[in-house]
Length: 383
Image 1 (cartoon, rainbow, N blue to C red):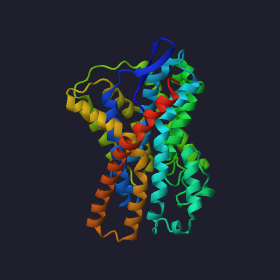
Image 2 (image 1 turned 135 degrees about the horizontal axis):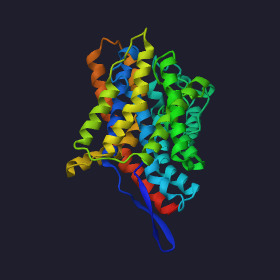
Image 3 (image 1 turned 90 degrees about the vertical axis):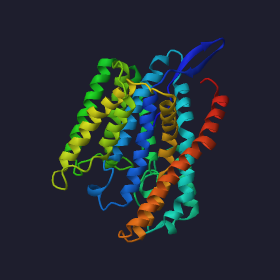
Image 4 (image 1 turned 180 degrees about the vertical axis):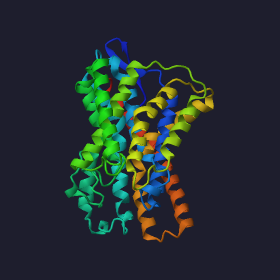
């Protein structure tokens, strides 16, 4: 997930960060992608396999987030390193990301025992002290090994699964800050090409025919995680340095529609031709997502209402993404505790789960995230 761009300006005896003109449509697209993730997770609980899941490619929103993050990080910070230290950069990223990481883990701990079900049959045997310990580790985003799994899905963050993508977001930020930001455009292009080739190779040769994964500390899952991270993030950085946005009318409608369609495409190739689905995902990440970023960066909102919608979607995107999954655990447990023939109740509870996730995300933004970040700005000053 990504933050609003900022820029350094000079004042006597201090340097402060003021708002840099940013791309409101990209904010809106971030929110659209977050909503699609929640919808995909609700649908996933009702599917029999990845083959029949609705919003089938919603998990590619994570790859879109990485691409968007690289673009915004480059746009926001590339021209500041003569005035900003590495420590200052990390403070700003922690200020933006970490408060909600902590809240997401707290919500996950509160909801943990409510997800006890046939899907997670051993939850009632997990002692409270262990849940608290995993929560405290989760506050740091340090991954836990599979031997410390308390849920049964072998997640590096068992209380709040999406924490895995924030772990990789921090990895990308660290790589950028400690050296890769210094790469020339030519060197960065080589890195992006090699990372793209690795992504394409993985997608068309892996046994599942998709890029689902990255959330566990195993060799296989770490491979998926880094393959999913390296191309999108650094391609986004390269785009921010090389592409000049144009002027495209109705850019939000066009780019949002493209994103929704790409994430909703049904599984391709079936059980026997899985490589076809992998090829679709590779082409989407390698080419179509960058096109969406370009379209979004090339447009402007044409009314106050449009601006407000994009701002709302951008503001709520990260809170929704990082707090919704504990409610998905509960809903998944409910669905698997009841016959799948109970279609109407499952749909109603699914809709309720979606509403709760959005509501909690909005409340988290207004009652927790914004006040905490404002306090951190005052405490840390101009890092």
